[in-house]
Each structure stands twice: as structure tokens, then as C-alpha cells.
Length: 91
Image 1 (cartoon, one colour):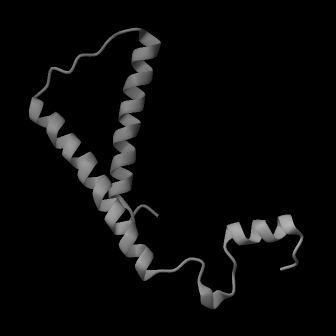
Image 2 (cartoon, rainbow, N blue to C red; image 1 turned 60 degrees about the vertical axis):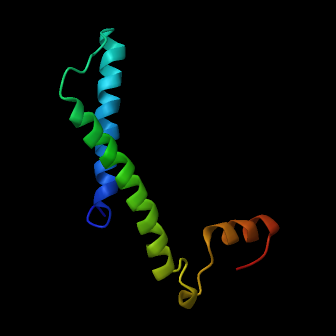
């Protein structure tokens, strides 16, 4: 699972770190101030924006290569199956 989406895992990790820091600030009542190099902020922002754009393009390319559900498998989409169940149509 992680090998097919390394950028997504990186973005998820960055969001996790931000969440932990924000929860820590709420619990302790302290206010953190970043005193590190300013270039690091720009690098992290570039990774976040670039990774998001990459995943958008990669998902569109992947969608063109693969069709889900596979029409050869004879399966219906989840939406179509749920709609048929609501209408009472037998599969």
C-alpha cells in the first residue's frame, strides 16, 4: 500500500506532525514560536504543494490506465449496487 503512494504518505506524515504539535499546544497552553531557518518553511511548503499537485496528476494518469470497476469482471460499482438495492432490483 505505501509503495504505490510515497508522496501521499509524506503529506500524511507532515499533517500528523502538525496535529501532534497543535494538540500539545492546546493541552499545555503554551504558544510555540518557530525560530529556525526561514528556508525550511519554504521547503516544506514546496513539498506540500508539489506533492499535492503530483498526486493530482498521478491519480488522473492512473485513472486513464485503469478502469474501476473492471468491466470484464462483471461487477457493478458500489453506487450502482446500492441504488439497485434501494429500488429492490435483483442483481
